[in-house]
Image 1 (tube, one colour):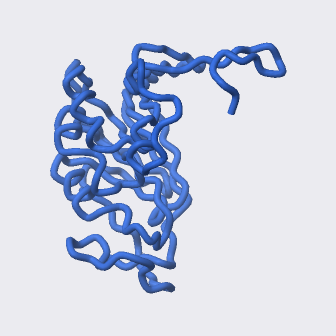
Image 2: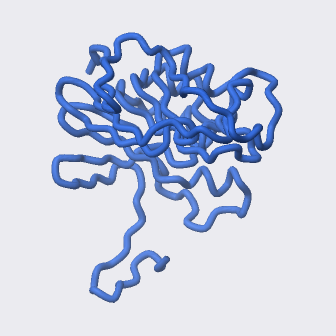
Length: 219
């Protein structure tokens, strides 16, 4: 990484992103909602210290909103909620679905219809945490996990969200790990069975294309 302000080989100058910065990529607009100005560029070398410097982006495309939360943990959420967040259609769940991220207050404020969890099969941290999955269920979000559904791609369309997945993985998952009190560590391997998804109602399957109905979103 280059220090802030130092030119790259092509002459471009690096800049620090902070609250209020805006980016545009074709039809996608991105607004930085975290970190605030003054958050250290080189944080303390602790898990939470590093995680809480994640850049959080509020995006919009085709009239659909999404929130990319990085690894930010739950001590960041109150500041985001206090500043004001809109209802969203899609949430990238923070910090692999850990118990110390994606608070109930954040979910209540944003009410995502879909939630994506990037997490490794049988990880030693027990991610995603049963408590986090329960919070997502409580607000009615449909959850996709890379350990269960493989690679996921979401099309943001005016009439809804279309989710493409590479298919459920058939090793390293035990449904017992979705229950509170489940043991941490690597689950038994070579377990067959289809992936479970939250609230399958209001979803039309077209092969591996899944069209998820989204609620009317207040401005």
